[in-house]
Amino acid sequence: MKLRILSYNIHKGFTIGNRDFILREIRNALREMNADVLFLQEVVGDHLDEKCKIPDWKTAIQFEYLADTVWPHFAYGKNAVYPEGHHGNAILSKFPIVDWSNHVISTNKLEHRGLLKTKIHIPELDQEIILANTHLDLTQKGRDRQTKMIIEHLLPDKDLPFVLVGDFNDWNKKVSPKIEAELGAKEIFKTLHGRYPATFPSFMPMLSLDRVFIHKLEALEAHALTDDHWRALSDHLPLYVEVGVKKIKKN
Image 1 (cartoon, rainbow, N blue to C red):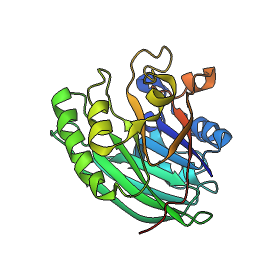
Image 2: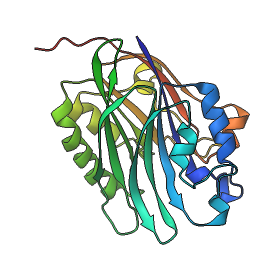
Image 3: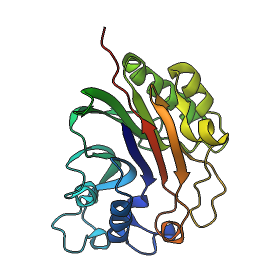
């Protein structure tokens, strides 16, 4: 069967420069894509500031608002905590999440990072898949340390198919080869198109920061969403991919 995946750094629901709060527009755009699984970075888990108030919604919890009735299963990893609230990574799924954990991979006091790891079950195939979502440091030294931690967290699950997604800040393409080599994974854009996708800044994407790695899954489609309405939302462009999933025989 085919699994449809979308990864997006939503910039806490704000446009570039934090000018406008447009979470409702982001939700509408995500619903139009109707992916099976969403990997979201920079998602607000709670916030007391009025500018983060969601119209017609009781709380400031963004992942619940985005999931609502479309993605009934979700997990949130709280990473950055401050007096007004907190934000982190989220995974929203149409398939049941049977297990999840959030691992701290911070390397300094200024950047609070995590690896959100879930396991979903696809009833049609009776197959489990690991889904992992992350957001790495701005410095190469930090990204190198975090890459090592991510590999250590995923190595025990190499017998299962997995998808590792996120904002890797890997503009110089030094992180990706390590993940591909150590985990036996492949980056789907590089596999299908021969290059990593340009995703930042959204209005004129020049830097390739975001990645989608797959393991024991078939690469079918991969697109950076470049339409005008996506360029006007977050500071990143979202990535949309489709992968083939097969039942893996258990020993």
